[in-house]
Amino acid sequence: MRTLKINTAEVFLPLLSPSRYKGVWGGRGSGKSHFLAEKLIEDCLAEPGESGEGMRAACIREVQKDLAQSSKLLIETKLKNFGLGETDGFKSFRDVIQTPRNGLIIFKGMNDYTADSIKSLEGFKRAWWEEAQAATLHSLNLLRPTFRADDSEIWFSWNPRRKSDPVDVMLRGPAPPTGTTVVKSNWRDNPWFTRVLEQERLDCLRTQPDQYDHIWEGGYITVVDGAYYAAALNAAKLEGRIGRVAADPLMTLRAFCDIGGTGARADAFTMWIAQFIGREIRVLDYYESVGQPLATHLQWMRNRGYTPERCQVWLPHDGEAQDKVVDVSYESAMSDAGYKVTVIPNQGKGAAKMRVESGRRLFPSMWFNSPEDADPEKTPTCNGGLGAIGWYHEKKDDARNIGLGPEHDWSSHGADSFGLMCVAYEQPKTEQQDDWRSRRPRAGYRSAY
Image 1: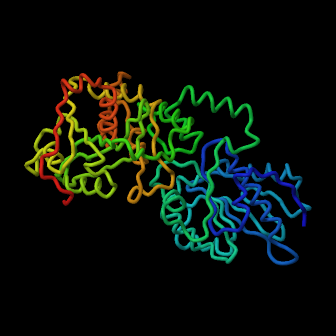
Image 2 (image 1 turned 135 degrees about the horizontal axis):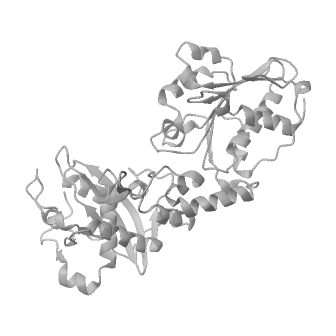
Image 3 (image 1 turned 90 degrees about the horizontal axis):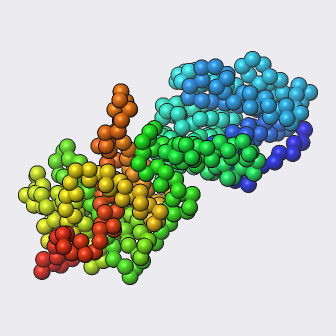
């Protein structure tokens, strides 16, 4: 058997050991496709041993209209670089590559398979699904039970698109399949990252800040155009201000809310939990709920430890208004629950854009508690809120190419409560005392609701 010397980046070392499922995700320039192409060739060389049939492998995409969209050229290039050819058992044909001892590598689109035709892959021991962010749940469910040999492996490489994409749910969700090894790889993990790619990366950071995190850092897509906080979020990530951030137990916790409602068509109720520590803003937690009564929001605060003894509440001007279903205002209800409540008055015309500008000014002073593996049901995390402000964007009149102000969609509620936090931080204390109306909790409060 031919012996190869393959240089491997340290980030990929966990993928050298056998695993039923292997995943590598990240942005451009990470070398993930090069690594998997080399690993496939290595496995094809090792498979026959002294006797037996060669490796059968399938290189897969969700949709593959022609071989130009496949990994065939990359594998052929690697074979050439390694000096492997027909004498070693490798021979390239139009649509397949022959491997030692009559093995083969095929290149297919999963959408071409049916429940009957997928059986043609039985006996295959390797599947490499490239661009797996496009994989459908139906296709995954077709493929997985087909590769059933004891030493079979299914590999996935992808640049994340949405957290709800099936491959992300399967491999990066709370319950990955048994025998899963997943690594994150980006450009900085590639020891052979070229000067040309470095210039491309810097140009993208300069000219497409709203797309940089997705393209180069493996982040989820925010929005195609006009994301207000894209550049600020990229800077925070690069500067290490998004990660694990602890609360100061001696400082006041502050809850900044955007009002929803209890009707079936109500807007989302959102809340950011933060601390102002000198000139630093520690953003610790995020909450969002649709159509739930105030008691649900208060219970969440209590479960998290954001009790009236430790936490104060800020509401927008409509916090004084009566709920359409329950005849009580958020201001009075939260005051009755024991919280000190501050209502920020209506800022008038252009308030949304004012909140955006305030947020942009303050972003360099913000640190976000956002561990990648956090479960929002169990531990404090800003992950959901960062997704909202990352998507929050300008509504456009494409015909006239002009902006029409913030788009009112799912992200705007989290962005509004985020903006409220920024306004509260920037408002001078003397002005707060003169113009803002704080409501102290009513006497007789006790910790039972």
